[in-house]
Image 1: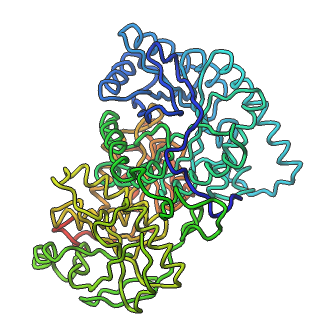
Image 2 (image 1 turned 90 degrees about the vertical axis):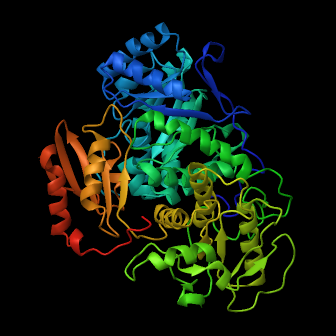
Image 3 (image 1 turned 135 degrees about the vertical axis):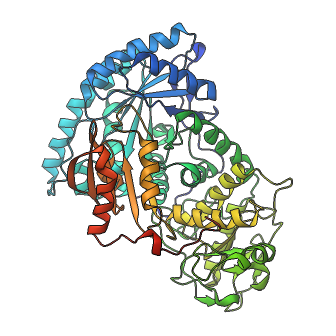
Length: 607
């Protein structure tokens, strides 16, 4: 296990270069000092050549640099030849990636036609049975031999043809072997990928990169940090590029917030060479989000912080106490409980509170009902908050004081609050901390789209570190939207639940129903269920695993048929799609989590 004082690089982590296609003929280079590469995935049936070509061209027009296409069978993989030929005939040289699950034979066929293969170690050569088994060292070694036998032909073929590969671990599809030895953990995700990487390296094949995707953003962040730490420990020649993504992020504002927290926080710490934002929307809508995320990083994390700041990118690896938090395991930074103005209680085991400016408070609160959930819980000007400059020494703050970073401190916001936490820890102080999304409100104001992304990156990154007892948003100047954004960020990071939570995958050629339409129908029927989490999955590839912390799951089981889950357990099978939403509601009722919409009194003004 890496030293818990592991730190990210002072600048962007420099990975070895991986060629995807021929850069002289429209290919791209991932890693090195090259710009972060944006990619996405088409959603149509892989056997529909013209539709695949059209969707790919639409993605490229939107700014996508790599296009991924699912190849669930050998037949689908063979048709990639026709899709690629159709694109090249239209003058499009975008590299194509075949997305492979379960069938090594499909990977071998796809490698003949595309520039890159994505394999998922959890199901490339395994059939998931969720079996509980104690593996002896000999048993485990035998399993690895079996995996090597299945994987080596693809490695050799990719090496021969000059193909790249992504070893893409998904939290939702770890093999039984990994689950039984490492559990459903970031360590299990990393080891799953390293098993396949060792096989590739054994054959002197290095044209690959890694990903550690999860729908739980805290798990995703921890997994990537752990991966990079393990690669650094293994040696300088393990400097493979990293692809960032949050699986099943969902749609709309929620999907963008989740993606910004997971992808953006890692980019801000110097990690990531290529990204995909996975939204339950038409794929071209993902591309502007990717580019806007990347554009926020130089603003959020300029490499101007001097040595001694508590940026996770700066503290020396050898110092066991250099970080105020463990980057591999989420735990709230310990603070005392404190009663603030308006009887707002913060700190300790209290939920993270939402603070607004006095002006926003005065505008919003007269319109609220006593039963409304989404509301500012205190006005900043009433809190008598102690503003500190973490770049300078300060005495032990008085007991009973809420603390924050003073405005205009000459540090990036994330680095400033990490340094504040480090100084509080050194002093032995347990004062609750108010997080701000910026130390100086941008002038002119940001557009709503950019304000959402920038705020989610900054606050999400700090909350994922376990820091913060209250949050204040100023990047979004409009009172009601700023409060709504605060609650949505807390919901996305798992710090607070004020509405129904959805895990919804993006569509692809494996999807067995219209995800956008179905997600909208399910949301319309269930959006009033505060504290209930529902997973909507187009197929079974990542279904059970990504639904691990969901209460209920709606999963495509066959064309026109849906399976319903309670947690990871399938309980109803082959339900006609026309009946499936009603049956899902019935299932929620059966488990005592249904509330009639007519009796639910929730916030309607701000949500």
